[in-house]
Amino acid sequence: MFDLRQIQKMQKELQERMERVREELKQKTVEASSGGGMVSAVANGAQEIVAVKIKKDAVDPDDIEMLEDLVVAAVNLALEKSRALHEEELSKLTGGLKIPGLF
Image 1 (cartoon, rainbow, N blue to C red):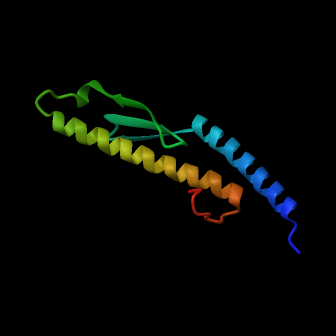
Image 2 (cartoon, helix red, strand yellow):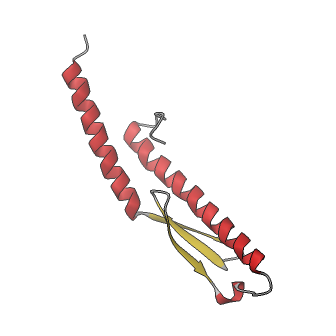
């Protein structure tokens, strides 16, 4: 028979561990670049962009569109890496199960 108190206790423990993992993910970062390293973006494990770096050589006043494209590419790559990090850390917590709403 199911013990409702035991299930509630397990749920509370899982929620607490998930909150700790989320806080830890905010401290972990990943970096991605585009344009051969001309533009780079840093994201944390919470899918937040925390830095964008642009080398001087990437700035051409006559071709701002290229710089914009490089920034978008670097940011998208950083977010992709951040999502992978997030999923990896949460899968450790769930034993590899993909629980809807967690990922």
